Length: 273
Image 1: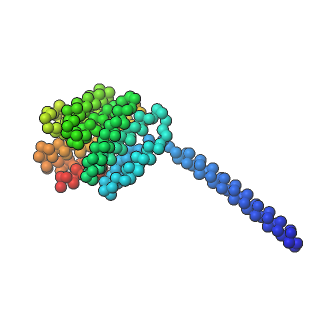
Image 2: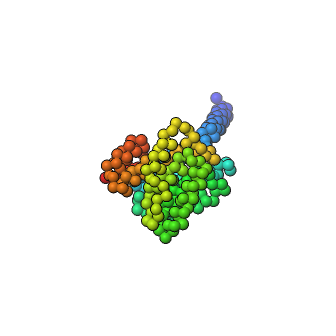
Image 3: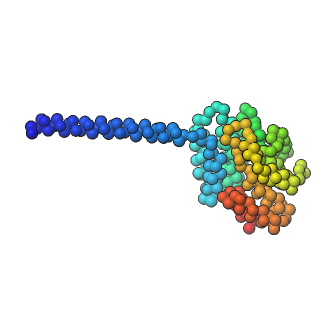
């Protein structure tokens, strides 16, 4: 066979291979893009679970890097304008958990910085809903131990935020949690505004009701469900505060049976031991 013909056949074969490769590459690219689009669910749908799971993993590893990485990822999300308040809320919730982890790890200055950052971001929301009011009450309460000079102002803020939250939705679990927290934590110079045993019993009663509304009432999508583990934890703290170690041990045992992977409950258990 003449050399020119062989060369031409070789060129044609090479050309066909290149065309086939490019076609396959294009198809693969399109399929990947389509899959990514189809799997590109709203990131807010899974964010509560991710924050709580990552917080626990950080506690076990004694390193909060993974939760900081998740927060940086959250800051890149391009959510719909009507879900902006929800994004702000979950960023504040991430900061709240980071603050608690940093406190456990011994970095109180960083913990205070994160609490203040969360408070500032929530205050900037155009409309404060029951979830924002409840989380703000919790954050103001957390700040008191780091800023004793601001105690009077912070206690006032805690009570105002709880009042606003309960007025909006008295069944909301986070509103109940804020009320329990306020009743259990003793602040020198301030009397109790509510009875701890009554608030804990009321919160647990509401949490045990077979009603999705307790967990889902909110003015933004993908409403929070967290709160029960911490209510159970404050029951433990209450018993510890009054010197009833036996009841505290029973309460933390029940709490960890229901929430075995909750870092804050694990830390409470370690303090009792």
